[in-house]
Structures are given as C-alpha cells and as structure tokens.
Image (cartoon, rainbow, N blue to C red; front, side):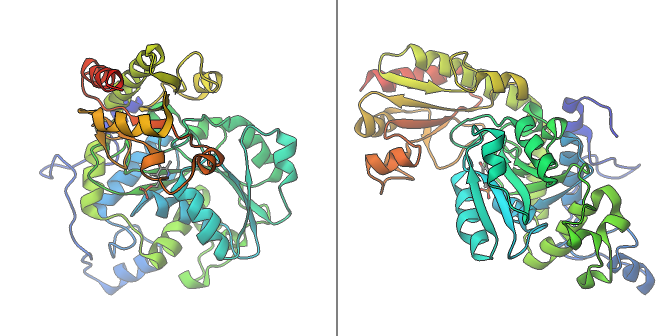
Length: 423
Ligand SMILES: *Cc1c(COP(=O)(O)O)cnc(C)c1O
C-alpha cells in the first residue's frame, strides 16, 4: 500500500514512466491492442494474464485513472465508467438480481433516486428507502432475508446532509451486506469512507475530480473489506459461465467485486470511460487537493456572508457552526466542500429575480467545477411543481443552490451582495 500523502498521490499515483516514455500519461486512443502470439491473447481472455485487449473493457489511459482513484480512496481496485449514473447502476447490479431487495437512503441525488426507484425497480429488484436520521432499529426493520446491500451518499446533492457512515455501516454489518456510498461531493480529499466501514465507493468524476466541467465520467472503487463468502453472493463465489468458469473470490481474492464489475457489466453494458475523458479527469485530479481546499474556504466565507444579509432567510452549509450537520461534518469531513444552499426572502419570485441579477455566478445545471454557478430549482429543474409539491420534495420555493467556484472570494461575495441588494 502506498504510504505517500494524499496530495502527492493526486499527482504521482497511477503512472510511472520508464526511460524515454512520455512524462505525462499518454492518451491511448486505440480500440484494440497488439499481441505477437495467439497464446498471449488467449491468456488475456482467460484472465490469466494482465493486459489490455479492447477499450470497452480496459485501456491504458483509463487504467491510470483507476489506479489513482483506488489509491486515493485506499481501495484494492477501481473501474471507471462512462458516467456517475453508470457507476451507481453497476455498483448495485453487480451483487443483486431480480427477486432480491436493497436498502437505499432517500437523501440522494435526484438522478440516482430516479435510476433506483424506476429503472432498477423495473428489473425486479425491490427497494426500501430509509431516512438516514432514523434509528438503527427502524432501519433494520426494513431489511429482509433477500436484502443484498445498503446504498447512501456521504454528502448529499443538493441537500448537503452528512451521512453518519459508522452508524449505517454498523447496520450493514448486522445484516452481513456491504455498504455502498457515493462519495462524489467530498471526494477522497475530504472524506475516505473505507476508514469508517464503507465497503464500496462510487463517484461521479464529472464533478470535482474533473473539476473543470469537461468530461462526464464515474468510478467504482472496491474496498476489498467485505466477506463475499457468507452464502449470499453466489455470483462471486461460484463459477461464472460467461467467463470461462472464473470464480471471482477464488481467482481475484480481495478484488473479486471490482473484477466482476469490469468483466461482466462493463463488458456487457459497454459503459466504460473513454481514454480522452480519462486523460482530462486525470489532469483534473492533479490539482484536486488544492481545489477542494479553496472550494471549501470560499463556500464557508460565502455561507457566513449570506447569514448576515437581511434578504436571506436561511443558509445551509455543513461547516457552519449553526448547521444541523455540523457535528457529523466535523467527524467525517476535513472541510465542507463547495456546495451550499440558501433561502431568499420573497420565495419563488425573489429567487428568479436574484438569479437574473447575478453576474459572475452563472445559471447552469451543473455543480462542482472551478466556476461559481447557481441553480434555482423552483424556476428551473422543478418548475412544473407547485409550492406544496416542492415542499414535499424537500425543496422549498426560495431555495438557491450555489456551487462555489475558486475565483477570488471577494468577487464572489460582491456579486451575491449586489444581486441581493437589488431585490
Ligand atoms: C451528478 C451526480 C451523479 C450522477 O453522475 P453523472 O456523472 O452526471 O452521471 C451521481 N451522484 C451524485 C452525488 C452526483 O452529484
């Protein structure tokens, strides 16, 4: 295991050139790879040898990103996917099938909620949603003999609620099922879920990892810390007929889960990350540690400023001392990350006016890149809902989500100040 500090790993992990090779990870823009003998190719197909054969399953540039993210999280292996959605989908399907059941936090990104509640449900997998602030007993009551995993988000998008990872991991241990967490918003710079008992980590690398809004992508990281041989996961402990009788736990040990995800689902769904996007994401991660630090300090300054403004009715950010998530944030996060929400006095109308008055902060349906941007769900993503329906969805009509960029904080505050004063 690599003992370097995380800042060094952001830059150095995953790629070590030999004499005369490119200093920077090259883009292996090739669908396929050359072998001199039929035997070499056969060994690759049988998973007896390491190497690349086809860029739908693995690729040298993508592999650098996978090794780096696995190292940052402290996992035993990773596989990159074409999007965060693909990462979450495959992380679940890898160990569940029709007739089984999963426990899912209802405090998750809307896209993931829809993926699980509609698409995964249609595949015959039943779902119970829980509120992570419910008691252990209440959550345990939702479990069934056929429950196969728990899924949650470490820092929620857009609610900025912090998961009590140890509490949920204890429930998972009691049920003898793995805890999968989506760690997109903190990134491994601010939170390393394996240290608190999570077993699988997923990412939308589209967000802070890329960090410049250039590439959609995702990653699944295997903690290598779950015992799949407890009788519940025959797909990992019995022969895989689609792969020449491989038995993942026997042949790949701690990396059984992530190897199966790649050789079955990445292969079959064709949802692997492209070399170009891996290159750009990898470039992004080289400065991830610096950016997360600045995103977080800027967000805290803006949150503190907004709290003092008379046109603002409330501010939510996990590192504000007054925040309901403050204690959990202190325990699990090194800093608060770059997203905050606040309410503007005057509801939906005032929200729309504020959006129009902002100059530096752009209106985009994106978060977590270097540029400050804002979203007003009531007039944008949720505009078809009434105020009553918004309330039920946990999004008030006055809610503004800010993804605080890494511009100079004085310029960011000045922009919000002039826009609020114009109301
Ligand atoms: C954006 C996001 C996703 C989905 O990722 P895509 O890369 O857009 O597919 C999943 N989880 C979280 C927390 C996100 O913010």
